[in-house]
Length: 112
Image (cartoon, rainbow, N blue to C red; front, side, top):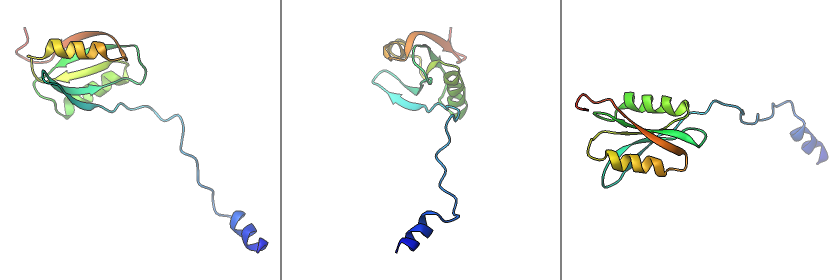
């Protein structure tokens, strides 16, 4: 009996490797919706970051990639595709624990 246990525990099979550590962090955005706006929210890895509300024509993979890139650079990003909920979106971002202030960036042709 001991011989079988010894063979099982000490065979030449490679041991399972632990998961790698130190992998680069990648942001994961989520769609958020309130009664005033809907948008794509992505948070940076660490808190106490500047917040940005992106005003866009539509939320598509290009906009999501742009928001993800800004989050990788340490910004809280909320991309919204309507002009009517801008103030509510700004208030939403300011209230997030990760955000310390908020700016608005318009990427729409109809912004003035």
